[in-house]
Length: 329
Image (cartoon, rainbow, N blue to C red; front, side, top):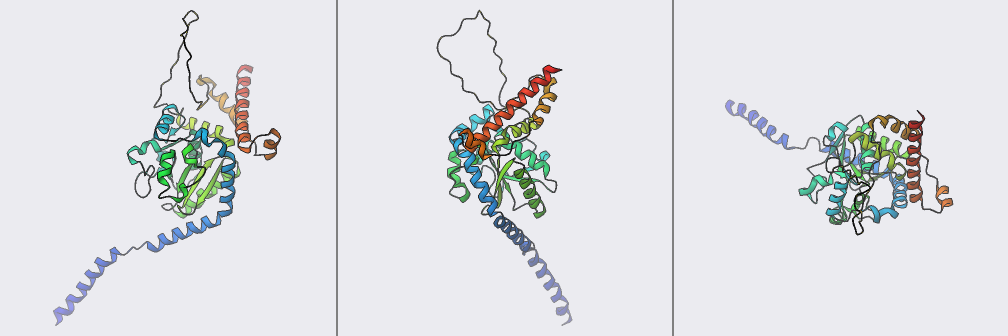
């Protein structure tokens, strides 16, 4: 009888040790995390509405020009620098692109996933600057550029992909995942996004269904963030293109026929490294001008066109200032 009494505690202990690990010890904390994210998204609803309206207003006139319809268009943009790749070592920039697990980047075309780890250079400039300001943890990215056919396929599983203005197909958006990110870092990312939004750098929407921040560069700051990317990574597509210089003597025979050249300006920088300091100083001297609807109305332009015009004016001013400073010395 005594032997039986001694064995029973051992058996009970073994059964308990086998069952306990199978219980999800962190299930409550995960549920609390998702609930906190959901409350935050609800709280962001008024800000989301304003941002969504602004994005449609300033970018809808440029959809036909910038949208990438198919995979060949995406590959072409990667080849000519219109779309640029993420850094090869994203962790150095405080970034974690989701490459596997639930809903990775390029989930509908994983064979070509590398092509979707990219965006317009200005978009990546925003991402790099935002990530540099977040100090409590890395920033996880779940979506960058897409093409139109990919967007259509995604609509079957992602309600947020059903939009009249798909910014991802223009290479002008990225999504920051929050489910795997500690709340401390989530709230810091939100604070950084709000600060950059208030400074006129970007627009963002908190997507409640996907629990991500959808981030778009402000059109008035495209030039600035293109420069941010170039200074951090070099000229776009430098690893996929060659610099070609063609010289033609005056006595050379001119070919017959009409030649057509299609090109896209992706970055402007001095060719002489000795002028880089003056160039950067001139660009920093041009402060961004706040959005002014009166400007657009008086000029007879849409708000989006006015903002893009301001960006061009800022670039011209920077060029003029750089030229003045160089030749004045």
